[in-house]
Length: 436
Ligand SMILES: NC(=O)C1=CN([C@@H]2O[C@H](COP(=O)(O)OP(=O)(O)OC[C@H]3O[C@@H](n4cnc5c(N)ncnc54)[C@H](O)[C@@H]3O)[C@@H](O)[C@H]2O)C=CC1
Ligand SMILES: N[C@@H](CC=O)C(=O)O
Ligand code: NA
Image 1: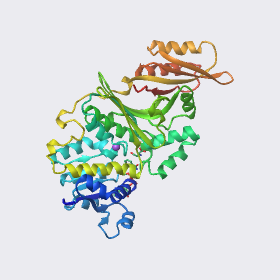
Image 2: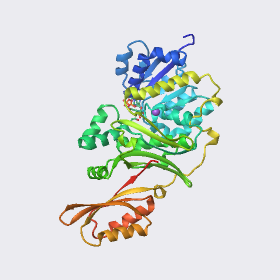
Image 3: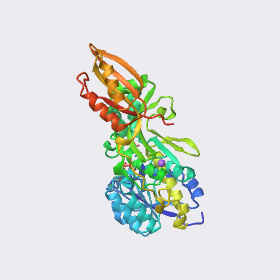
C-alpha cells in the first residue's frame, strides 16, 4: 500500500474492543485492500490496562489515560468502546474538538447526546460513525442511510436487543427461569454493563431512537420513546400466545402516522408464521417498510465480540476511505441533511393504534362475558378472537384479541373492567403487530 497507514486509538478493551483488535489483525490484508491503506491500532487506553498489555506487550502505548489518547496528535480516528454516557460524552466531544473522526458502538451515548455530538462533528468537519451501535453486526445504518435513500419509509420494526431475545427463546424452548438465562447472556458477552438496560427495554429504545432518526429524518429524541421490558412477562402468556399462533418478541417499533411518529419498545405478539417470529437466540432482525421497495428484512448477530467488531471495522474502513473528502459531500450522520431535519411530533403512548392481547382472570359465572364485551364495545374496541380456559373450581381465564384500537381507550376499558367484582387480578395487556 503506498498511502500512509491510518492511525487508530482505542478507548476500552472489553468484549467489543478485544473483538475489534482480533478482526482488524486477522483480516488486516483484506481490509487494507479494501480501504486502500493499512488501518493500525497505535494506542490503547482503558480503565484496567492489564488485558490489553497482555495482548500488545511493548508494541504500542497502553495505559489508562483516555483524555491523553483523544488529544494525541498521532491519532486520526478515535474508537470509543467504553460504554456509558458521561465520560464517553466528554471523550467524544474532546476528540471532535481535536479534529479527530470517531467510531463508536455506544447507542446510549448517541441516543442521549446524539444531537449535540453530530452538530459538533458537522461543524468541525469530522465523521462520527456508529454502525455497531444499532443491531451490532447487521449493516442496518448503512442500509437505511444509503441503500433505501429513495424511499419514504413508513415504519421500522425489529428485534434489536440480543440479550432479551436470547432470554425469550430459552424461556420458550427450554422453560428455563429468567435469571438463569440472563446470567448465561452475561457470560456470553451479550448483556450491557448494567443488564437492566437490556431487560427493561432501554437498550432497545436507545437503538430504536437512532433508527427512527435515520428513517424519518428527525432529531434524536430518546426521552419521548415509550419503553417497556420483559421482566413482567408471564410464562402463562407465552404459552397462550403460542396456542393462538403467535410468538412474543421484544420489538422496537417506529411508525409514521398522519399526526406524528410512534416510537415504542415493548413485548409484542407477532404471528408465528412471520420470519421475524422465528428469529432466535441473540440474533437480531430489523424490518423496514419503504413506499418504493415494500417490506425488507435484515437479519444477523446483534451482539457479541466479533459480530459487533465487524461493524466497528466497517466504519473504520468507511472513515479511512472518506476522510479526505469534502465534509459537505459526505453521507449525513442521520441520513438527511442537518438543515433538513423535520419536526414531527413523537406521539404519546395513549395515542398509538394497534391491536391487543388481553387476559382476564375472572369468576366463571353467567353475565361475565357480556359485561366485559359491553365495556370494550363502549370504547369502540372490537373483538377479533376470544378463548376461554377453565382455571379451576369456579374461575376462568378469558383471552381476547382485539382489532386495532387507540391505546388510551384500551387503558380506560381495562380500568373499568378491573373495578368489576368478578375480575380476580389485574388484566394482562400485550400489544400485537401484524407487520404488514
Ligand atoms: N457486547 C456487545 O455485544 C455489544 C456492545 N456494544 C456497545 O459497545 C460498547 C462496549 O461494550 P463491551 O465491550 O461489551 O463492554 P465491556 O464492559 O466488555 O468493555 C468496556 C471496556 O471499557 C473499559 N471502561 C469502561 N468504562 C471505562 C471508563 N470510564 N474509563 C476507562 N475505561 C473504561 C473497561 O475496562 C473495558 O475494557 C458499549 O457502548 C456497548 O453498549 C454494542 C453492540 C454490541
Ligand atoms: N446488550 C446488547 C448488546 C448489543 O447492542 C444486546 O443484547 O443486544
Ligand atoms: Na449495525
